[in-house]
Length: 189
Length: 189
DNA sequence: TAATTTGCCTAAAGGCTTTAGGCAGTCGCA
DNA sequence: TGCGACTGCCTAAAGCCTTTAGGCAAATTA
Image (cartoon, rainbow over all chains, first blue to last red; front, side, top):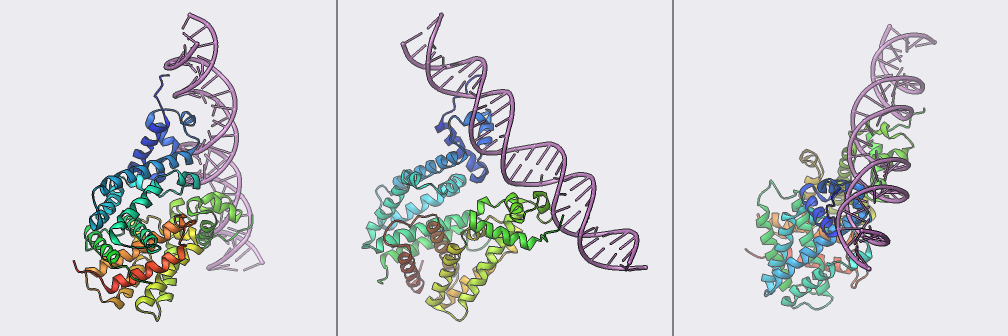
């Protein structure tokens, strides 16, 4: 009856790995217990419930994404920043599909407030400083960028662009070109 | 022991309604059986399994969406078509959140091939006929439009834009303006 | 070393999925 | 109209997941 040394942090990290391996949907308290070779009930002294586990994985993914984005943004501006930022999302989703799915997990309002979501929005705004957009257009542009990045990455991950020409990488590059052009030339109302 | 008259079609429609009421995730063979006041096992002569049910709901949603989009597109061109098409997605997602979630369900390749997915792509291409874009830019633009529509609607549905100014409707309008401008002025490589 | 806390365990109840086999309406055909 | 075949819904049962309650032993503290 040796102790394995479970902690919320270890469980969350293992849950994130599990998500990348089998998909976020399949992350289950049982599967996690199996992975630690421990009885299921044992996890319930560390986790409130299954939803709690998923929330924690989502928060972890949002933090990781924000950290990477912050790194990528350091020392860059304008189109360079836009591209680097966008690639962080896409690359993260490709490297960690389960975590990326987790990042889309519908958080309860207080969890959302405590999440790295705010950092993401702030960073998107920072990118736009290179583009001379006043409010409220800046907010519109923030929302649009978020939509394109999230939308493209989701569709790509869902297999939407595979098996058809031109390849996805090329579309991605050209879409970033287009966004850059659009931001430099944002239409008046 | 009267017969209720279950059919795959009725089950699928009821499943779609259930999805809108409680969320696509919560759509379950058990819940559906409850709704028809019938034993769970009875549904298994009509449905292969739970995944089959979800696939059918997804296909239904994709059909409905394509039908609406086709209606909206009839007799419109250019920016007018773009706006109408985009609004179909957004409105459908707001009216039928569960079905919209279903439409995002990862389909198996053959199910995807038999789905209305192709009609959606064709209609997006039709819109672009008003904008003078040659290949491969047309495909890039199709992918970008899909990304923005899907991304925006997902983020909005997830509550991303509520409780903050400016309101979501305004951003949506301005983003459509921006897309129209971008398509009229698609940058060269 | 004794007392206390903490961590993992056993047990059990309840829900969802899926398969197997059964009985009774319902429909086609003579 | 009556008989047989089919179809549709049912009971039963096994397997997996979640969650709670209560227990014992290892680790921590004094």
